[in-house]
Length: 368
View 1 (spheres, rainbow, N blue to C red):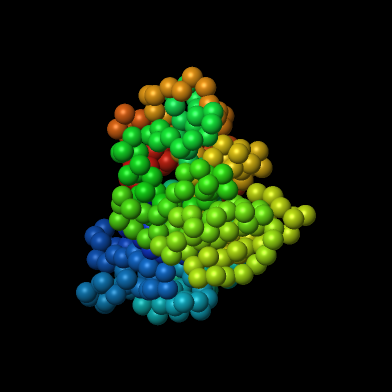
View 2 (tube, rainbow, N blue to C red):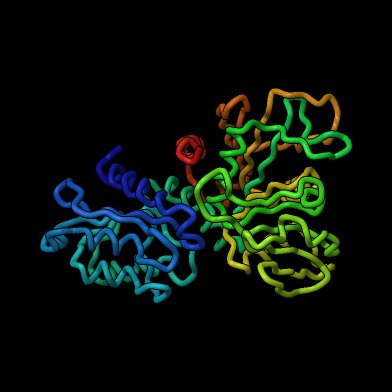
């Protein structure tokens, strides 16, 4: 790993500290380096707050060093006025003469304009340092802007003989307590969590973060005919709830009934509608039919599958899913497997599949 890659890797670690708090914005880290030493650093800490470049530049004690320093930033500096002023302008005014960028920003208001602004001001820009790693870290943000839908993560638990539930579809907890805690950590990392009508009726889940620290995601229930009992847990005020349906549109307290035209009803249209609500990531915890619908439509990016040592002999079969890369780890007595949609590398523009596999393993070790 050369010097630029070393400092970009440091910026990437900083970026990941932003997590869910910055959504729907991207996670970004920045490092200021002078003569091989870090003299400033920062990351985007919360949505609407100062960007990584602001924190990094403000942390430099001796600003006279900036004109002979290099700024490393995981994502192209913004060039437009949004919640904050353009970071490209700040970098130019700081006196920084060299900027190293991990990957370009797909947001249409930026999309190369930040780099163009820097170079036109005489700033030397080096691009695509650890590009795949920086891209993968912001796969939610990039998917939302390039495909107009949230990044979709499928999650389910199955027995060692491949079943999700008993034949009578009664509620059964398959995975261990350690797996339950990890799922609650995942919930805190995503903007939305989705189930179907049957899961809401049978399991009556709360879909909140109770076993881990973090903010509750927006609950999403697929209920085409609005037939669910309003006394179910998903309608309580602990978190906002979106009910995707074909009947009516409207708000009632913390519940938003989001209508989709019956003729347009599909997983793709559901995902597009959720993106229009500002959701950049959704964890799908639905039952077999809901999971199958997303899989058959191709509307998934990542799958996280718990396999418990218990057996049912018969029941509701778990989905069969092929994907890349396969990364397995032990969680309590369960085995956790990660899969990615085979199309994901090309959709994100990743150049090296083997690097994605390595990045995924490291990333999930951090998440878990």
